Image (cartoon, rainbow, N blue to C red; front, top):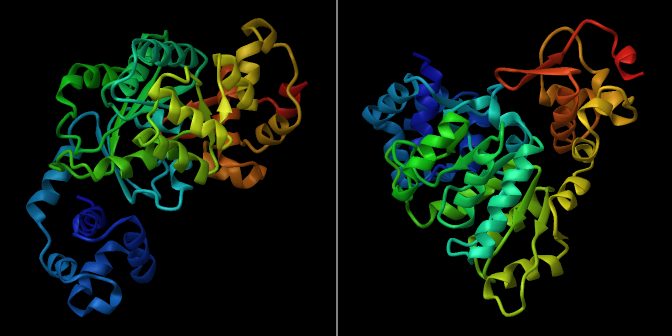
Amino acid sequence: MDDELRCALALYRAPGVGPVLFQKLISRFGTAAAVLATASTLRAEDRLTAATLTYLKGPDWVAIDADLEWAQRPGNLILVRGDPRYPHLLAQISDPPPILFVRGDPAVLGRPQLAIVGSRNPSPIGRDTARSFAHDLAAEGLVITSGLAHGIDGAGHEGALDADGGFTVAVAGTGLDQVYPARHRDLAHRILARGTLVSEYPLGTPPLATNFPRRNRIISGLSVGTLVVEAAIHSGSLITARLALEQGREVFAIPGSIRNPLARGCHALLREGAKLVETVQDILEELTPLRTVATISAATASESPLDGDYRILLECFSYDPLPIDALVEQSGLTPAVVSSMLLLLELRGLVVAQSGGLYTRANAESPRNLLN
């Protein structure tokens, strides 16, 4: 058993220790084990509450060992930030979760994702629109990410799963030992067959109202962009969209009738600079590296040369598998751009995605020969 992971879970479960404080303590002491070892010397001056200090001196090891036992079951995983399988785009936000609980294939978290969010009580047209966009975008190779909620979230997940080879990620606001809402239990099982369930919340965490706004930063943080289908003027979907803007990601909104109260949130986003969307092509054209995926056929894709940033990125590859962060550092491109470009390179057979979020060249030829 990994003692550092056990200690990290203890620190993570301590009341009052959020992502920012967790990281500050790790940066100060080096490891979670060192934080616990010095718990008796910590004081309130260290920005720790009395409840936090009390817990750190006597963590709930029963709950922690239950987390570890859960992670030993097939398909379950606990990812600590710094693990090469931890999603690179999420690691770039200001307050990434120190720990992620994952069910399903963690490699899906490293693929280019588009968030689709909106009302829990959408109009029939809104629901159909979300399902249709999710289906077509998933068919183009984007993983559809949402929050497993009623309404637009559920329609987005379903549309992605209905596409041939489509994948989806559901970010939960509870521990992964439960499904919320319970009505989506069957949907959650479908997602596990071709996607991933993920949560920052430990096992046993109930669906508290405060969990879901925090969950939204993960939805946007995992994604290269966020599409809002229908949303009231004061809604969690607008929180997600504004978080995406703060994270430097693209935001898209579908306009609606001025008589539809669920269109007002989208209209507000459009006034704030979101991209107006009428077709799937509008999204693919904005995500420049994906435009080629949408517009060139498989036959011409294998023949037409790549240039510019694609040449720079492909020449970063060696014979050894590389994580996205290494490719970002070597190429000088942004994480969102690299993540998107890898999709096209993979479709063209130039790179191969491996487990653990690693990528390697598809063969031993020179990158220059492949590009010409």
